[in-house]
Image (cartoon, rainbow, N blue to C red; front, side, top):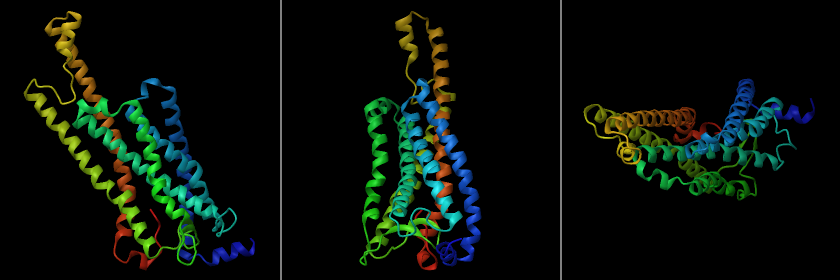
Length: 307
């Protein structure tokens, strides 16, 4: 081991040195599972035309972000834990700032994609008559592109900015063995807090409120369905159309419409459960870190990770 490596180890606390083994194990597991799982999701979507609908397009967009995180970003994190120093050119190399920037972009873009997925399901359940007009293919493409561009636009000042002393804002943090914030003070401290609130704190109550509203809509609609012949909000009057266009009698048309309605309701519930599960996992993973980082004086107690 060279002198630089010995110096790097000397600068790391014993607790961090012990924790890094857990970080290595978790990182390798996330690399393998995240890369394979998200890659298969992308392949299935691209090769199955029936799956290429607006909701699945947003899910695949999320899978692409997570695949890049697992296959391109996490290996550098694991390498940093193993070597206990930035593996490319040392701590002062600008590549450490690039790593931090892209890693943050991937994390916060995942959150943005989850917000888009939530909005997609909310419109489908609460405003079904507007769904097709809002989620046309051109608008879907624009929504995916914007969900990828918003976060880098907010984080770019952090990448190119410096402190009053000319030091970089993000880069290799030897105390945490990660590429993260290294010099935060004054206006940059406030800007970091804005980013946390904007991309972590605000999405959580919004998503929770949206899913509560969606589940209540389905629940109330099912109760109405049991007590009246009135259609659910997302149902289309297939019965009348079939009578007029195919010559079916009313009883045959009613049975056919019931089959269509049941299939539609099952599909809506399945998609809602998928999107709700994605958001619940996000909340469980990010909420503890967010609460800790927002506590008064948290940064004075120890160095904090960005997310």
